[in-house]
Length: 171
Ligand code: IMP
Ligand code: MG
Image (tube, rainbow, N blue to C red; front, side):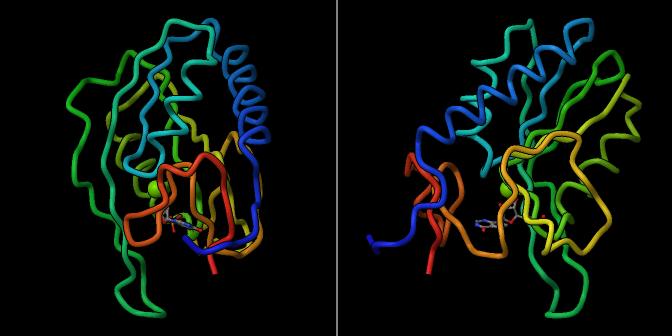
C-alpha cells in the first residue's frame, strides 16, 4: 500500500463518532428513530455510530451507486437496493459516509420524503462543501474536508481500502 498523508486518526474518528452519537441521543430521545444507512460506504461508520447511540432504534440499509454522465452533465444516482418497509411511523435519519457533489443525498432525501416519514434528516460523517453541485446541507456533520480524495474507514478507491481504520489522503 502507498504511503500517504493521514487526515484523521483512529482516535480522532472515535471521538467525533461519540460526539455525533451524543447529539443524536439527545435530539431523538422522544422520537421513533429509524436510521437508513447508505451502503456500501457508510457500513463501518454506521456500525460505530449506532453502538454509541443510547436509544432504542431501528436500522435499515439502502444500496446506492452514483456516476457522472459526462464531465459537465448531471450525476446519476441509482438505487441498487431499496428500503422494503413502511416509514410513516418513523423519524428517519439518513446516514452516509461523505457528501461530495450532494447528488446521492439529495436523491435519497427526495426518494424517502415521498413515503411520508414523521421527520427526515441527514447525517454525514464527512463533508466536502467546496465540491457541492446541488444546494444541500446535512443536518449533522462530523468533519468538513478540503477537496482531496480520501480513503479508509469505509471509503474506497477501486473497491479497496474500506477496511483501513483511519482516513488518509489518496494520491
Ligand atoms: P456525491 O457526489 O455527494 O453523490 O457522493 C457520491 C459518493 O462518492 C459518496 O457517497 C462516496 O461514496 C463517494 N466519494 C465522494 N468523495 C469521495 C472520496 O474522497 N473518497 C472516496 N469516495 C468518495
Ligand atoms: Mg457513499
